[in-house]
Image 1 (cartoon, rainbow, N blue to C red):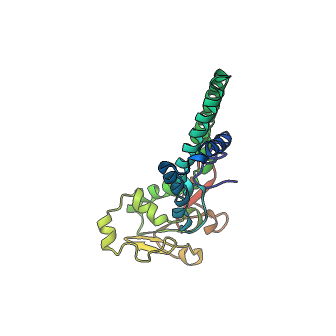
Image 2 (cartoon, rainbow, N blue to C red; image 1 turned 180 degrees about the vertical axis):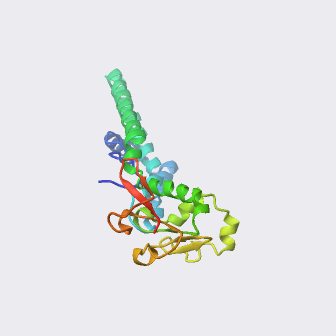
Image 3 (cartoon, rainbow, N blue to C red; image 1 turned 90 degrees about the horizontal axis):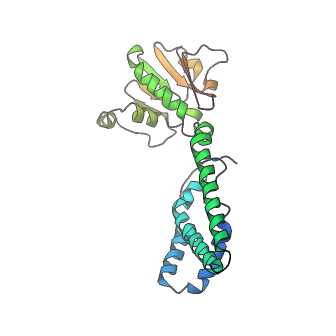
Length: 240
């Protein structure tokens, strides 16, 4: 299943690492009294703690801190297998390792540089970034701006602050993040970041509304549409 910010069809480990991990664990089982092995074991047991206290949806990337342990064990399994086969079919073993690495790296490059940007540009809120840059260029043409902070425009105020290079001192002097919550309304300068209410917001004068497609009535004329890399419309700009 899809996970935001994660390369499609790739897990945290490769499938071919599984037998190596098992061999690595077996080969080092008798060395549990070794101080270095104790350290690695403590590392494994404590690595999940940071991710365990996070909020919102769980995500595989929160297990990154434990990955080096499995890579170490996998390398130990590879060493064990090499030593076992070095007087037998060592050439075949080396060939299999090289082929597995080449195929894995090739698949990763394809998924990361070609598939990942197209399928996951929405999880990085690509359309919102384009909308922010557009609004920043249009600052002199409107008295005020209203950004939705829902769905495709979640945390829109942070995107505006970052991409517009808004002066941090000016932002703090105006109160900064008063609410303290990502999903709460935010207001600074001429910009509001809150849910769009078309019934009320359509009565505003000289304002640019930037929101999700479903924030506005069907068939409404838009000034500009902002697309994801897969071609889907993510954000629209509307002038009442």
